[in-house]
Length: 357
DNA sequence: AAGTCGGGGAT
DNA sequence: ATCCCAGACTT
Image 1 (cartoon, rainbow, N blue to C red):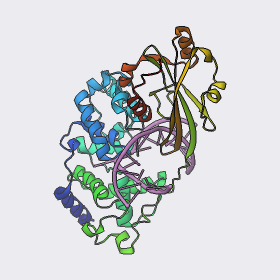
Image 2: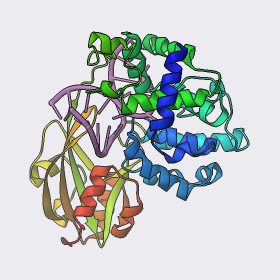
Image 3: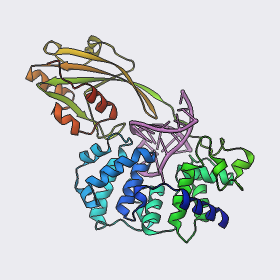
Image 4: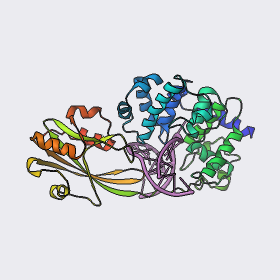
């Protein structure tokens, strides 16, 4: 299969995109880019990479930052456990590895947030180790070219593909091979309507010959989408608003949102909403605007969300509600710097949250 | 092995 | 609407 390697590498050398993390061998920057790019498109991740490297040019800087500032930088990227593991990993590298990443694939894999793919990427791009990167692009490319129909969602299938890639990777410039397989998958061997007419691997491709581009790769994993009905209370008092840090499990872990009332169905007016809300002295609050219902779609959940704006001039009542929801009070102008789900951030930006006082 | 975790772009 | 993106972690 020397031919496969030669074709793909020479295609890469002529056609690849210029990306900032390809201009360096700094393991810190390569690691950072790989974490950002997990399940994330290059064009979505790129500005975050620029922000992170500007703000934290080295791993020591990142390790010394506090977690909330990292989450704030990550805001909008999703899969926030990546950000928390990023920070944890930086601290581990500083504390246990003298500020230098381990160089071996097997050792890299032990660090938080670094799995088989990311370990292979760092080991090959930063340190030249001969270990194959197998991401979604590579599954697709290998599956189609070689006609491999193992399920890429199963550990067994992942093993098959890793071993196939490992059998192909050349000792000379393994990093180039890894970049090339991923770039081919991203630019030519795309999920829908692959560009077979421009593909240097067209001759010899199983899927092209048998017209099975749409059936490969095989992926069984099925996602069931849950519907949830969220009712946020935006409670204000003298220019301050209550916000609550979310638990470390579930969606948006570690981010801030508002006091939340969740129900099995949508609630439309204040009376119904506050009926089941403990410690809420309705008489001391002024009920303000009720927002439209927003539909926020995630991979596993459909969220139907409505915001209820409430204010009070009574300090004691405000304190009482604050404690009832185990929330914190922030000056409105400080909410900008707090890490939030994109939904909350957009609502805050669109509604200056003035008025009702 | 199955479930969970975001937001957005392409089709 | 559906799929999936330079996947990893938890149960």
